[in-house]
Image (cartoon, rainbow, N blue to C red; front, top):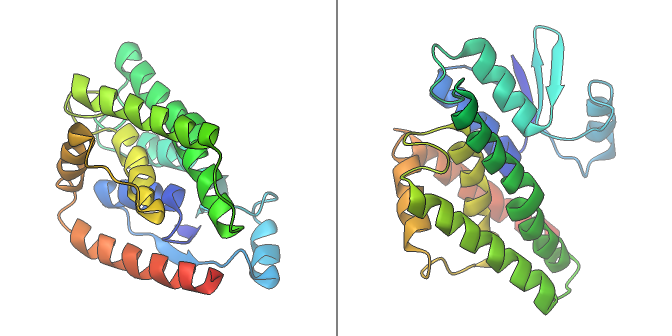
Length: 210
């Protein structure tokens, strides 16, 4: 099973961690989308030429949440990560949609401005703060983002929260998010090694953009 990815990408991190949780060994293929040759090669599998892209015995899936759900539904031994109960699953789905449509979206807007050496507007900064406030509320209500145990919602949101480091965003005012991060990462015995690879990759990536 091939995964075209960059560890710097939060969506890619979600897929990597879900695969780890499921005990799936991926054939990892690092890709640089700024390289026209590599991007063109990827476009032959995925017309959008985006990462992550998964190829499972000829079946191609892209968009991180589609990959995550595919892996869980095909390879998980139970429904813990993506509960089948409609009410619980609806909360998991809501958190996933909140991440991609609100939290990660507002974070990425500000990150992209930084690449262009531009400052975010007060409105953009406030939108990100409100999104973080919402997440603080979610993980205040319960120990995990969508249930009383780890789900794919936690794993996907973790990548976004980790990316707050790109902005040097201060999470000190958010004790429940900080506790939640510790709780989620503790679910992965080798997370420290994963985080080391992530930090090194991020450092190299941002150095290349300077």
